[in-house]
Image 1 (cartoon, rainbow over the protein chains, first blue to last red):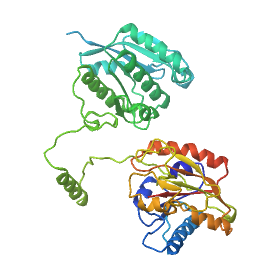
Image 2 (image 1 turned 135 degrees about the horizontal axis):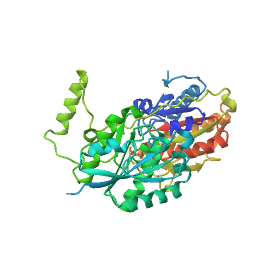
Image 3 (image 1 turned 90 degrees about the vertical axis):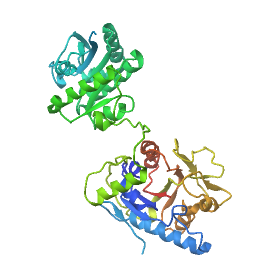
Image 4 (image 1 turned 180 degrees about the vertical axis):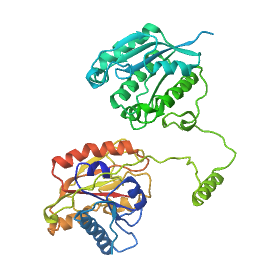
Length: 78
Length: 349
């Protein structure tokens, strides 16, 4: 889906837990997520902390979307 | 025993009639062999014989599909053959499509074995490899000397109803058929052997080849985030509670598009996941963990992003074929383009 969307020229950032799959599939902007059942969360955290974590991932994703890339790039947080 | 009767199909080029300028010629039936049919006859080694050859222009066939199919089918019927062979088409797209199309219709209507041959990237291969045996050739007619004998061998196997081996053994394009078989060694032993071979740099053959993926050019970066329209897409199966469109838990045949106008937070009461490939507890309690609507709404309010697109698109990614996923996204990407979405955040579990 990443590629079919990006084929239209719209940039796509893939937030995913299993980065190697994303690399194999061919996403160009990749942001690693937390875990398979909760890529953008962590039930062990308090609600506000969890939301801050989620926000940091989304901000990283938006940063990736504002970055020109010429090849597959993984944007790690921190 | 008498020889098997074979009808052969070729295009205008291999019949020696002409190239592109003759690609619009109508189907023509000739007795005996024409062009590559001669080598095919030789490969049959007296067990089968090309009794007639049908020649058709590649453009004519593809532009007048229904008519051409009907005409050619009639010509084949006249000879009441034991088998129909088309090509080899190598990497000629229209020829390959024609070979595949006509083979499929012959197989279905006349119920006789059919065979064609082409290069693996010929569009005809992708279209028909599931339906037909397609002998794999190189990408140009320079391969004729190898391609035709391989076709002859395979054709005789089909005519004599002999067991067909694996694609690698018999040189045809993989059809996506899995067959159970007994082997001496258990899976663990075979896996370790492959691993050892891989580590020592030796050749090994996987028992489960992965589909081939091709890459796309990265989209241009967003210039002004505060004006950007961002859309959310997920393979994590987030759906409105109750899964109104009944998206399958795995091997999805469809995707969902849901309006999130006015939705600031995905809660346990309103959203859940349809995905059958991971523990749904965390997503069912708070679907923002998979689809970050809450955070993006906040950022929209703060003016960090221009706007969160009013729909999100969702499917379940587990076991869903590359073909289906691509088809889903090809379809909804058009809506994203039409609605001037600037960027997409796609989340996967």
